[in-house]
Length: 407
Image 1: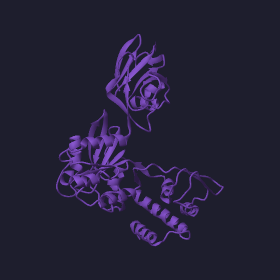
Image 2 (image 1 turned 180 degrees about the vertical axis):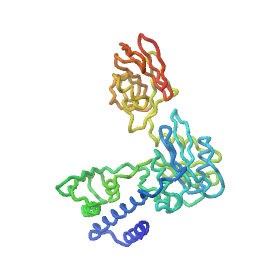
Image 3 (image 1 turned 90 degrees about the vertical axis):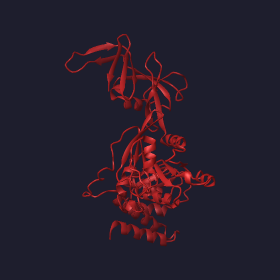
């Protein structure tokens, strides 16, 4: 019996089993078995031959947005209009057969767009090239699920199920469950809130299926058995998602009003470029990027080329590291103007967390060795101020002058 057949068998057994106190332990075991089998599908075997030519591409920019959807819903048209990148367009299914990359510049940030081949129902189980497509989707910072408003909204649920089956959790945060294995002491379970979706028997059943007999588990929120399995598996990806409902030029105003009630949805017409402003602004909010402007001593901030950071790596240290690793080696302090500080400017250390559109001036240690291979090194006792962009690193040296060095 194949893995897919075993999955179907367990799903059928779960559907037939009524949940109650007597069956909770058994259902917990079934769900854990199901998760383990799905992991086998997610992990290619040694002879699988990789992801296939043309599916994954090198990452560029500060974030990656993947277009996921059934064939012929308008992904390629949207890609071409947003980026100017040619992606084969046709009024027939499976026009795009490989991943087509493009770049969009928005609010000073360079963002990579991926037009992925259309997926079909059963993609998570290996139908078509679905597994390779979804594997690339797992690497994205944001997913656009592109839907045709003229087709049934059941397509939305099917795509969600396919991504869910491959370990992608859309518009969700990781469960607030602290799980730690230990050598002895049995299972110790605590919770800070009432648990209404999971019982102690189910917890024991899940851990038993994973052959975990000694562990500390702390529930910080009301969680389900699926949340617990996600934490134990440890391979889930939590990605924000926008439902892009295309072809609104072919529906009525009344139907458009209904579409706006769908959470995380943006209606557009890719062909006419309708509502692209709202789509891009929603994209920016979902990505939660942080723009930091650099300021050399005695000059105005450089507002043209911000250093763009992600919201989970936006300290002064991250800022310096994203420009050049050498800056941290001689970092003394930083002066910050903006919403992250109480006073403008404020002297901060490298642990300081920056906020969007802060202005930063880096101060370096007074003693810095300047030299190159084959030349004598000299010591310059001065204070260095660095102004950096993606292309160049400008170093202003007090009393010595201005040097410019390409990174």
